[in-house]
Length: 289
View 1 (cartoon, one colour):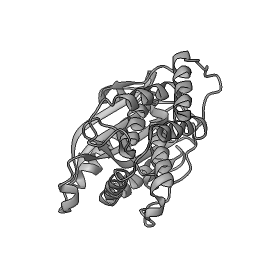
View 2 (cartoon, one colour):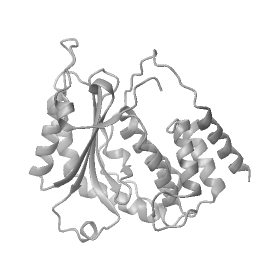
View 3 (cartoon, helix red, strand yellow):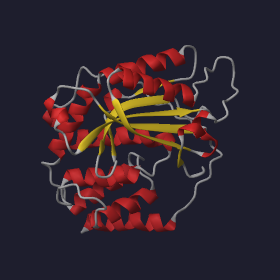
View 4 (cartoon, helix red, strand yellow):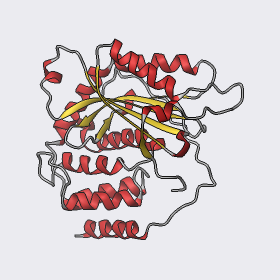
């Protein structure tokens, strides 16, 4: 809404993007700075980067980096995992629309759907020593990568033990759209389609909570880079509270996150997608079945 559709871009495109010219109190964190330090810190910590994906809006004022990584570890649970891979992601902006964010997470190998635990997120305003603080926080999260990944594996396993009817899934999708504003109308269209016929094989029935989780994260891949990391985290937190909070999987040793500070330009226009609105109505009908 109100912005050019974000697209996948090259590393060189982000490196060559024009830097902002803001007040002296604003510390410019270049995309190149983030990419260079992310690569160095990951490799220095023994991680192998198997794939990099970069997305940005027009002019690269908002950019996102996703790294599929393999750790060097003796942990048998991680080494034997065949469904989920480890991921590191960051979001950076030149237009002050969002703070720098980064997180360790996971991705589903069959479809590249992302998973992010809220406790491991970090956000920092571009002021003062933000550049040094960002390096410190990236390093800190990398050190906690295995612990975070194993928590995600546990969440995945527990979701596979939960059955969700079509009506329950429709209700959850509606709440994610209306109450939590994590989803947009076009993403409801995607979820409805996935509920009817999944694009990927998640090795569970369509009435399984793990299938629904992937339907939503599949739809979230259409989210603008400005919001993808936070929305993915918020969705995981939502599912955790709804279904997993009684299983005591909360990690009390995790890093406390700062609040996300997103500034939206009020000049952005709102586009009405009648097809997506119809899909939302169809989801409502499903809830009444």
